[in-house]
Length: 465
Ligand code: AMP
Ligand code: ZN
Image 1 (spheres, rainbow, N blue to C red):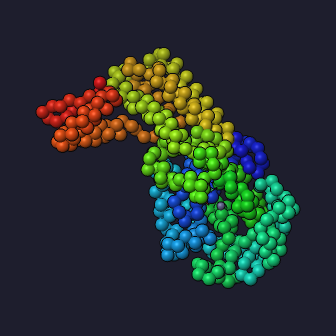
Image 2 (cartoon, protein in one colour):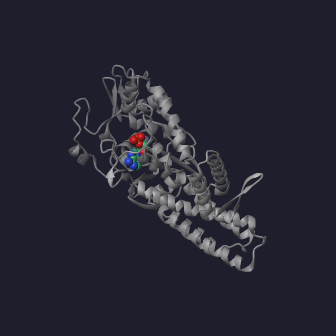
Image 3 (cartoon, rainbow, N blue to C red):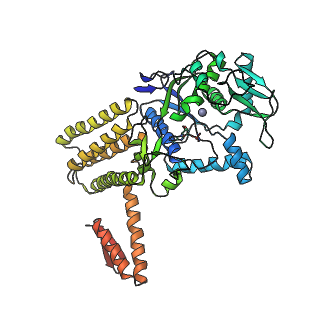
């Protein structure tokens, strides 16, 4: 299996530290708001990568943090007149609602930064003891010059970074690139006790610390959106490796951004969508298909039109599934017939192709195409006289290949029946209301989908045409 490793700037063979288990850390959301479709892509991408690793037989220990203390949290809590803790509680709950709706598997642990204050303080103490950090007036800074490899993740050297640093030079820092690992309390801000007085952790240190405490000194995969490579992940490498003297993460993975109508998404451009707004209109299969139909390292362009076309594509896939489910009930043939044994070999070729694509740096774009090709093949070759065994094989194969992508797991049959029942109810009501136009329309719409209604003395019955 090959993975593009940001730190190596190339694809590398994936060899985890332990043969069976993968330790994976993904930077999660700052919980001051509903998450947006850009965040959603990052979460869906790494959920898919985790699922695929599981599909390939690894046990994955998957950590994704919640940043529940930082400037944005403090500002928003003030605006809403609630505590930072209350704000965090609220948006963590909202995060789970949306993530569950997006069919994102729950992490092994979702640690909150504020639950790790003691461990963070220990981390900072150790950095100071080892000469990698220094205190000034209650703030503690990481001394970048001390860490020889600073810049190795993003491929920059410290001199160039410093020369280009447009940050206002803080006289109290030894070097302009030095960054805060501990921040002293400002009036009205939440704060915790520390050897340097009341204060709170800097942002970067929380991820170094929680990865260390939950996964150990060296982890297999560290991931996040591409905006995080510098400075967030660069600073994490510096802190973690300064502390342990060991490699922090073997593989660094970064997923590309979502643009909206070919522009950067931002509140000021008024092209900003929360995941929730989109989930009100489309289900997870459609949204995930959209997110995964581009490779995770290329930007994707969001528009309502592209979601509409994904929806049409997904409807076609599910129509094929529900068709197979009906055939399975109707066919009289139980056992595989000779020519079907050969056909199963052809079908399994699609699975090999899919694995080849996903093994190549998780090429979901091509893997999705393979699923479409597979279903097209099944549509033309599986018929009413096919055997139950073959039809089941087809259904299982579609589900198997859909699962790592988090799609195609629903049985549409039940759904379809429920929908028909609901429409019949609606038609009955229309008739009671003497709304003949509506009642005729429902009957005609159903007929178009191949469903015939029969009015009988016992009530309305339906059957397939
Ligand atoms: P944040 O809540 O801004 O800290 O971001 C949470 C995660 O979403 C991080 O991994 C970010 O890199 C990622 N992210 C933020 N904005 C976008 C975007 N427009 N497209 C893709 N990922 C993003
Ligand atoms: Zn992080």
